Length: 398
Image (tube, rainbow, N blue to C red; front, side, top):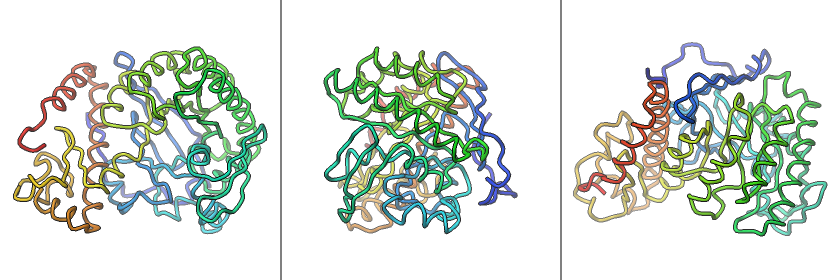
């Protein structure tokens, strides 16, 4: 059975949270460790496993939100750090909330801002209270605490919110990993308290805890077990895809996921490639986000069922074929490779729009096909077939 998007004659209104249904997660089917479920939020239901396009600054770069929805996306991600700097959470709130502001009436997840503070901000000073930093835009000073992060996300009105945590790059010493993990646990409790003080559960919203522990297995298990004692609506695996090889990431998932609650959604943050998604769904992950499909599209790279296609390559300049004649994505089958190559080589903005559209559509198609495979009890077969397609490729095209 396909759960491809259908036109809804009665879309959920921007003020749906005025009469919220409680946040809920239903685990519908398992196939091995792969999970098929659904997340209910005030702005609709998200079929899982799900990939969330990244809308950092209240926009999925180079995309109309209607086109994002048409790809099958049911949830997008917004970024607390960037939105707190501009236009500010208070301004978004005065303008009706993030859903109305960006014209997206489906589910929104916001991250906590912690990762961007660590990777972008200047002159960071971290202590038990939070992080003091200077904006990478104008040098203005800010103080981000677990309470303030949740407050910002509440002002934005996101359906799914994240605790503030400390994410460190790998490799790192065990001592440094343990220090950051323990601090993140203490911040988790403070984040949860603030979320409940602000009435998040009564609004049908959710707050996820974030498992940390770097590449140290016993620390990952401890983090997951301690977080499981707090009443989070969902749980995330953070601090991966930060410099470690894929095999290390997958090993950490193998160790961590059995220690996480089975009846709550599991979100792997900042991941990743189509192969990362396939491998992680196999291990029991329900949600993903990554800038990869949008960033690749802006740089001339297309994802297809046969692998990656670099439209900068001159071999495409006389190729009249579409990227994938079997795709139902308008951007994928209405334009020739020669035309896409021309747009990329001449720096036309339409190149980024069409290739980003193609990439998000491919990611959503991959997720839908994984859901269907789990429902049919043939995920292992789908896994092997997909791997073989990528390995074999369309030699004439790549």
